[in-house]
Length: 335
Ligand SMILES: NC(=O)C1=CN([C@@H]2O[C@H](COP(=O)(O)OP(=O)(O)OC[C@H]3O[C@@H](n4cnc5c(N)ncnc54)[C@H](OP(=O)(O)O)[C@@H]3O)[C@@H](O)[C@H]2O)C=CC1
Ligand SMILES: O=C(CO)COP(=O)(O)O
Image (tube, rainbow, N blue to C red; front, side, top):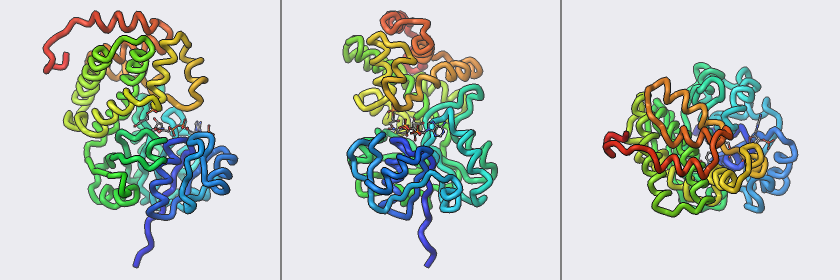
C-alpha cells in the first residue's frame, strides 16, 4: 500500500497553523514558521500561543523553521504566507521542492505592485506545479477550536482536487471542489474590502440596515468584477463568495472588520494595523483592486471608498455619507 501524502504548510500564522492542525489529524504534517520560537512552541507545547492563544494543537503536528526540511517533507504544499510576502518566501523553497508537488494557496490578497493573485504568484515561482487554493468562511480561531465549517478546494485539475479533499476534511470540516479558481480566489480577496466597510459601519453605529446594504452591494461589485475578468458568477453565491463575505463582515474575530472599526475610532491605517498585530489583507488590497476595476471597466464604489479611507484621503464618517449618495441603477444590472 502506498504511504499517505505528507502535507507541508508554509507560514506559521493563525491560518497556516489552523490548516496544519486540520491536516495533522489525517496525515503526517509539518509546518514552517520563520520565527523559531513559534516552531518551538508548536513542537514543545502543542500551541501557537502568539496567534491562537491557548487552543491546543494535535500532538502529531510538527514544526520547523528550516525551509529545506519543509521542502524535503512535502508531497503537498499549502502556502499560508500573506500576499505581500509570498513571492519572496516561495523563492526560498522553489528549487528544493519535487516538481510534481501541488501547491495550494491559503492567502486572500493581491500582490502589491503586480496585482497578481496568490495562485498566479505560486505559478510564477513554482512553474509546472499543479496550483490551487483552499478558501471559504473560515475564521482561523474557530477552525482551530474545532467549530464546524466548510471550505472549497479550487483547482483546474479534478484529480488533484479529489486527492487533496480528504487531507483537510474532518467530521466538522467539509471540503467541496470547484474548478473556478479565479472566482473562488477573487471571492476571498474582495470580501476583505467589504469587511473593512462593515467594521466601519460597526464603529460608526450606522445600523444593521446600512450594513446589510453594504454587504449586498459589496457582493454585487465583487461579482461584477469577477464576471468581467472571466469568473463564474455562481461562485460568488457560494462558500468562497457570499459565505466568506458573511463570516468576515459579521465576525468580531475578523481582522479586516476590526481594522474598519479601528479606523472609525479615528486611528490611522498604520496605527490600526499595528494595533491588530496580524495581517488584514484588505488594507493593501483595496487600492490594488481599483487598478483591476479600471483595467476591466467595472464600477466599484465600495472598494473606491474603502481605498480612500485606508489611504487617509477620506474619513470613515465621510465615507458613509458618500456611500449613501451613490446613485442607484437597476439592482439586477448590479450597477
Ligand atoms: N486568519 C484567518 O482567519 C484566515 C486567513 N486567511 C489568509 O491567510 C493568509 C495568512 O494570514 P494569517 O495566517 O491569517 O496571518 P497572521 O497575521 O496570523 O500570520 C502571518 C504569518 O505570516 C508570516 N509572515 C509575515 N510576513 C512574512 C514574511 N515577510 N516572510 C515570511 N513570513 C511572513 C508571519 O510570521 P511572523 O510570526 O514571524 O511575523 C506569520 O507566520 C492571509 O492571506 C489571510 O488573508 C485565510 C483564511 C482565514
Ligand atoms: O478570511 C477569513 C475568514 O474566512 C479571515 O478574515 P480576516 O483576515 O479578516 O480575519
